[in-house]
Amino acid sequence: MERVELKKPSLCTAGPLTSASLREALRVMQMMVTSCYGPNGRLKQVHNGSGGCVTTTSHSSALLGGLSLSHPVLQVLVASIRNHISTFSDCGLFAAILCCNLLERCLRLPLSSHKMIRITKSLLDVCLTYLKSEDCACKVNVDFTHSRWLLDMTRSILASKPACMMTMKEVDHVSLLIVKSFLHKVPSESGPDRVLGRTLTVTIEGPSVMQSAFVPGMLIEVSPYSWSRLMPSSGPPSADVTLALFSVSLCGEFSDAGDGAVEVMAGVDPEKVILDELIVLGKQMVDDHVQILLCQKVIHPSLKQYLKERGVLAVDRIGAALMEPLTQMTGAQPIASLCPAPTTCYGRLRQISQVSYGNKQYLHLVPYETAVCSIVLCNRNETSVKELKRTCQTAEHTLNLLLKDPWLLLGGGCTEAHVAAYIRHKSLSVHSRYLKELGCTASEYKLVADCFCSAFEAAARSLEHDGGEVLTDLQDGHFWSVPPDIDGEHVDTKHVCGCRLLNQGDGAKWTVLGSPYEPFSPRNRTEISSLLLAKETLVLDSFTAKCNAIRVAVDTTGLILDVAYVIKDEN
Image (tube, rainbow, N blue to C red; front, side):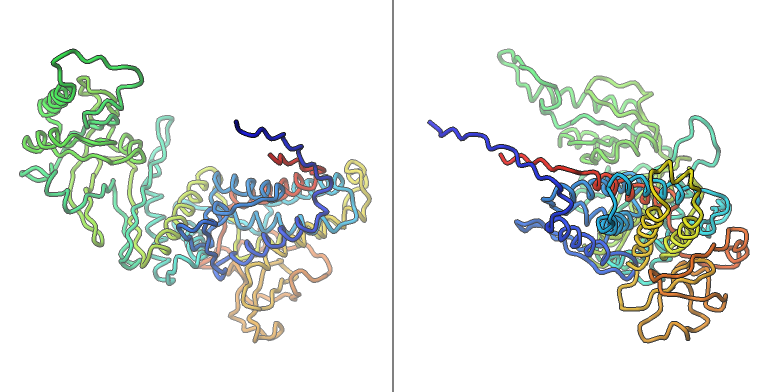
């Protein structure tokens, strides 16, 4: 008889935010995400405690997704950031850095948590209201008649991930492919039945990045050994191809027949019966002039051979991920049974061909006028290929967000520094009635506002990793990084700010970012519009993703500040 152990009582910890262990864990988390931030960020290697696959990355989804955390407060923080990443893809590291810095500074303030939460939420409203206003001087309206802003934003995302190990020429090449695929999948006409197309990603390890390519349609990998076995003697169908798409297994097993018992009569061979049914199905495909049969699962070898002899190309194991794009691309309806299917379930392709990329062979399915395309991403090794795929998917998702909100923010730390300057200026003149609604004094409001702005400035300073001086100008509030061997007062006139909009010759006094300075009102959008038109290349961030990242960081900080007890089950 096993020994019965009494359940242990739950452990209740009061005031968890005051513990030294939490503050140390928060400091480590802050150092980790800060050191990864930006194009000069340091890489991290993530693996589990029992060994296994090692991931080298500075990408927020891979970094935070591979963490195992024990402290519940950090679990809340990381869960909030990961939820943001799953929805918006971009600005995950920024959200984590801003949240850690804001939380660290709020914990040092001599104010009640409820008062700090109310004031930070009001400052969040001021921040987002400004960013969404027409006067905001750190955002750019996207003109879809020109690819300039699309390329700049895509280039900014790709260049921010050093694990991709690309030169600027390679970054430009891949950026062009991503923007091309984005424009390809956007419907040319609007309407209720119009949907956004799909971009499929194919990765190849070994070839140069410059061999990456944009391919209209879909690529299905076929091994050289399988190619000769499945290809009919007449070769692949060349034009106006009829296609059948099966989601059910065609291997002759009972696994897809559902639950329950199967009664077999004496003298009946179940395998032969099912094989006969498969051959009948194959005969229907031939009679209906189907030229290619695609199956999500496995096709029985006898059915494959039957179809091959009659000029039908049969490809199996295409996987669940390709089913929806195939349906969208061909108009085929997935067939989920062995019963005779109506011809309305079949789809159409313009043509099928065999193509090679690197050392791999693919079946190239070319559709009629549909918005499904593929990007072939090549890179030198496994680490760089995986990071490039993650980064390209982030860029693709960020481009999709522009269809809803066609705005971009200035990148390179300039938006953070600019917003901090704006809020410092606005916090000087807060109406007494508003302070009464918040339940705080003017000095308490200014204390939290300084903390809020300092967190934004710290997020901007996180882009500097090589010991350089980080400055801000007192005219526009932009970010300037000066190499450690150069005096800030004698910077070359060709030196540009983080977003590349301003250069040293544009004038304005500078100060160290984060140091005390006299608050000022930054120039508005109208005053810098001529500069936006004149600049050829800018560093840009997603407007939608960054605004949500700011909201997530502030809301998560408020949630954590409101934690009074942590109850842990010890069983």
